[in-house]
Image (cartoon, rainbow, N blue to C red):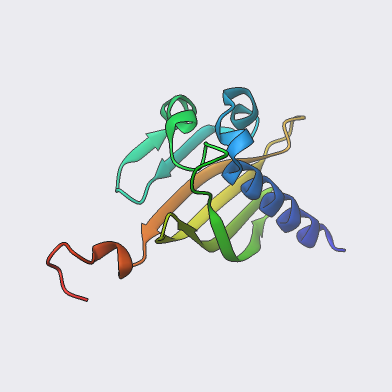
Length: 135
């Protein structure tokens, strides 16, 4: 395995951890995966900073073991530069699909790979039905 392949594999493993209920429900575990300068633009268009995300994660969908879970598909990654990986994939959560893009950064310390930026864009279709917007 090359260093690039290792970097992508590590970013994917951590991305999947962030989707798991056990991590989403634990501020301490999520804290280890978000970069100090983390930002997100969610599917709603809302911008989140690190503190807002850590505070909200335990109450968001996907944090309850018995509730709807994220189902990722087509996850692929590219090394943009040493210590910087871009992941793209789709998720389904409770029937709603989103295209997702994450940038993972590895700083020169012991913290390992952390999510620096994330964006989710809704996939048009099933979630717009019944709102008078057509197919």
